[in-house]
Length: 313
Image (cartoon, rainbow, N blue to C red; front, side, top):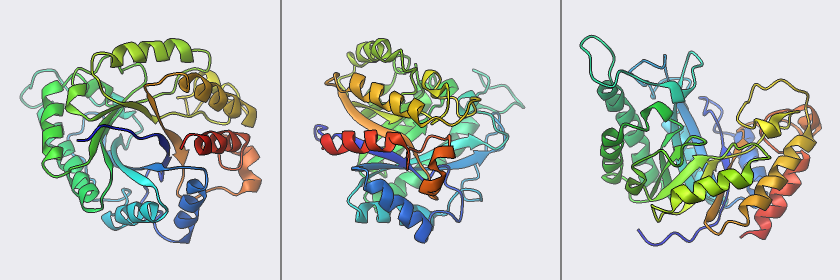
């Protein structure tokens, strides 16, 4: 791979990838409006659902996961708008358990679900989308997202990344969870280090210092594969909590983005962001003031993001 020289003015589009929502004029309008924000990269993010955190089968060909036709449409549409694409397949648990808690016994126990069974199914899922990423010319591929309990399974991750490299020739990253940048021991296996940067508004300097120290041993580029803040009271102090109680607040989100961009812009090693997030079906501008989710469309933070991205090409 050549040396990374990109500035990622990115957005995450289409989450969670619900079947039937990724094609047609509504999705097309959403992506067009997103590209007008100065976005030059898009993480096209979809999920497949295993039943529970201890399930070992990932039925990615079934609903609610988007079809391969929809996935290819999203990639092609993004490219037609001039954006580079990171394809990001993610596993979720249908019962609502966060994927970070997917876990099995450290050693295989007869009759119990195992890491080897899970990685076999997860590997099939990931390699399937890596092939699509190669066929459609995606510039980047994300092999996993916030799989905290699995991060210590170094041999399995190295084996999976080798399988991805056998079918995909672009840049490979892994999206570790917040606070985990210095705990992954196999960063040398990927091309780019990325993480979920949902850090409290008053901790940016200390967290960036910690990340910088963690990066020093790897000589790899870094960006936030996820980061953002709901437009909700209190969210700037707990930006990862999408269910935090509080009324809508555009000002809370606006302040968060201003602080994050200011702090990160002083770090030469920071290559950018795939902001969370931009849905395939947007709410109307009239509804923006009452929307308390992560998307900044129609809110005060929209101007912050657009101005920052258009100045950082």
